[in-house]
Picture (cartoon, chains in turn green, brown, yellow, cyan):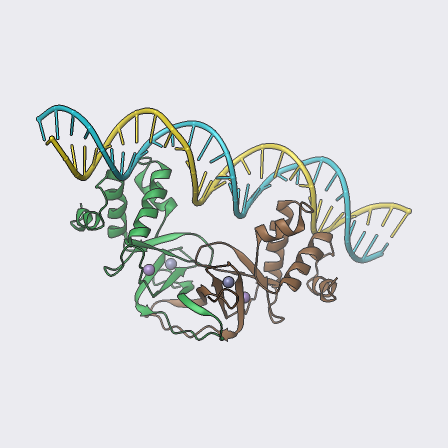
Length: 139
Length: 139
DNA sequence: ACGCAAATGCAACAATGTTGCAAAATAATT
DNA sequence: AATTATTTTGCAACATTGTTGCATTTGCGT
Ligand SMILES: [Mn+2]
Ligand SMILES: [Mn+2]
Ligand SMILES: [Zn+2]
Ligand SMILES: [Zn+2]
């Protein structure tokens, strides 16, 4: 088991349960975005669907993972960097989704560009989601 | 009835039906994004849910409307400009969704900024979706 | 007006997500 | 370590969203 797991849960005042350990481990290993369905498949009947929904919700609230908007409106999740905390996400990087294999990447080193809007719009968050083909799927 | 309705349908080789006329009229009047649910409510039992799904699908394919990715992963649609055509959308403008009232705007005059990705990623589309509070909801 | 092609409505289904509540697991206390 | 208090889980039931097949209806070209 990944050493950071128990640590992360404790730091966020979450009790250490099997499902939380397992789901957090998936994110630490996979190193990419996961959808609810991915987790359900990979865990293979081990946990109830509802538990997975609630665990993901909790992780998002605590700033452990963030949601990723995608062009096809499917919900994906990925690990946050350390500076996210309860109710305060700072994941202002670009996301990429491969049209071919569906893999979703957090491009941590590509920050979202500044956007200038007409007067009257107050910006709270800018999401940039790029689609195309990824490294593996280049033909 | 809006004069452009029949024209638009004919130009796209679509037969003129009640549901298509009515749904297209909603987009021409509303001047903003519509969700499937909005259309269902506004049309009030007039059409079957399935017909609305199929009409929206057809309009997207023909380049009459485009989908809008949102931070909360709900599906919205808005009118395309005239230069979109069957299978070829050119709606590369920024979208704004108000956290307060939920209204979604096409900011036609704000083009999406260029994004530079690490080598290996081939870009086919960039979506920028901004959240915040809109003109009406400014406190 | 007629016949063909396309669109619609209905039913049935699938996928995704939410809620209430009793049982089980975890954490805190003695 | 045993007991109690608190959280979390699993289950069932339900809601929402979207898809598919097929018979019926509608629109369109002749
Ligand atoms: Mn990310
Ligand atoms: Mn738009
Ligand atoms: Zn790929
Ligand atoms: Zn608003």
